Length: 387
Image (cartoon, rainbow, N blue to C red; front, side, top):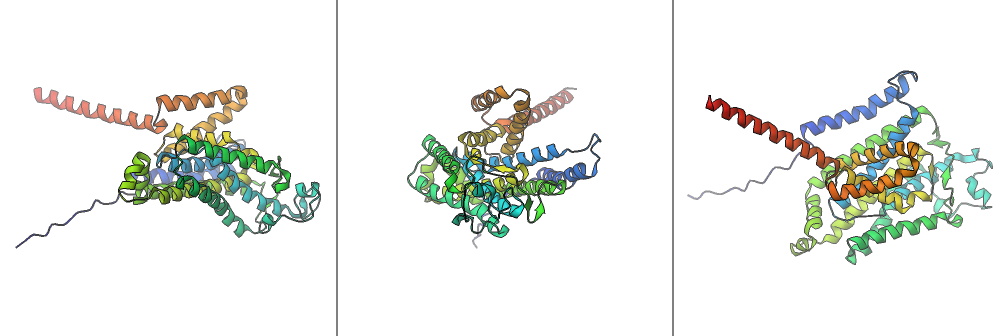
């Protein structure tokens, strides 16, 4: 009689731990209940009132946090450093901005169905790429499709040519700089240097009201939480494990029978679409979109957020976006001439001395405390045995 050996496969890890789900639900309550109550229900003269400025600032930073999370997927888990993600952020913002400009209708300065900048430039009809800009459903599609298609085409040729490392980073930076110069030109139909601004409505509802501002805040928070869960699921799956293998040893992955091209191209496109969604949420909250959002400096800042928070952690880039942009909002008011120096020094310091970022410090602190507790327990047990 022979015994049949059964192979016991390891159980898949849960999406979040019990403490992780608790923190997630707490964040959900803050976004959907606490923040709206403090802003809309608490009197303005109360100590607990959440000001409109704070709502706009946190909403903007949450959009940045989505970009930082997208950067972590390609840089932290795949080893691809992009210095052009500001382009995908701006493309999503422009897609939403075109819809918001059409929503102005006849309420513009020139009382024309065309946007004001087109009337000023003596345009008679809308350009072809504005054809479906009055449809909200089409706009939602373009928000993810335009950055996704641009990223797919660029990534296909770049990854197929096996461009990697610093060369890939330089090419992405050149790409976003070229796009910025293109959008600065008036004849492209994107508002030139001024871009889009003076928005009136969204879905025929006034955009500059406290209730709409809070609605956009809640949607941004929910999107950030959804993107975090999606990223966790993606990294925990086999797809995520292959990405990390490509990051650590791409040649060995090829020898194992996997083609890195498909995996790199997929995560690159997903990351770009996440940035496009962030840009679309950013525009109605800030009230403007112009080509400066495509500047290479903005793309470098996205990488800095991920590095400061901690790469390959998912939660780290979100913390990094809040820490860096919170410091930026204070320093640009208190010491505006020193902000860029601070940003450069921060990136250099994190790269040299904190390769795992803020999350690495917290993990090390937790490990040290746990080690100290175990050592103390062993010592107390030893002393008790001696007595």
